[in-house]
Length: 268
Image 1 (cartoon, helix red, strand yellow):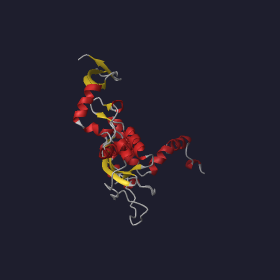
Image 2: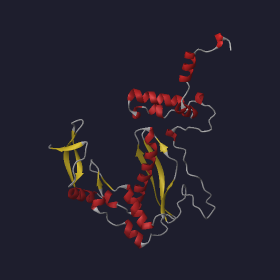
Image 3: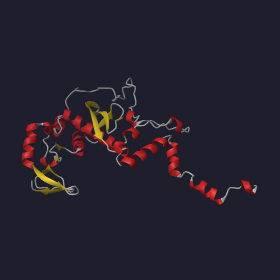
Image 4: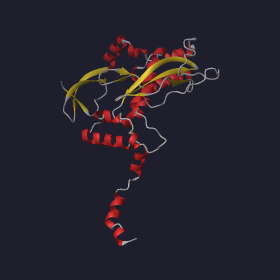
């Protein structure tokens, strides 16, 4: 080509430097590159995802669309995971998203009832720093597995996941031995968009805990007299100091256990 039309070496180097890398190409392919840039700019300016709610809930820019077949939905409107609608005319299947099949049809066996209603062992109960007592969700699952057998129960979603600016919620049905047992809505907070999937799992566990109340599992935890008696026998309230900030407060710990970092026990 003529000398005057040949690009200089410096021009070629500049063009190569401006070529999008693989990461940028993936971002552009979503059709949300503008929103991604706005979200990143907000975080670097404020250093807190919770202060970027407007940017995190922004809809994809129509001008950024490049014909990609994948539609990125606004998480504030849900995760687009609405349960599949089944044909209830087929006797082989039940649409647990709508059906109340088997609810209160008959009691479960005495063996299952004894397991579900068994009093909690004090060592299984945990204490939060604010004095709230609870049973870890894995122990609810162990009780259900022991009563109904692994595979003999399950959690069926009754609607799609709803994601707000700071929490995830979804309604679930507890089904055991082919019968609806209970319905409850679970919820779980999150602090950044990356935590939404973990919050969705926590939401399911929260719904499971609430459904188990109808089976009498861990019912003591909602009994004020039991709570007062348990706390008097197993917990103590102490003054602590937050090591990094030196701020003092009171919190609850189990008797015989030490205060954990970042706190240290101190005198009031």
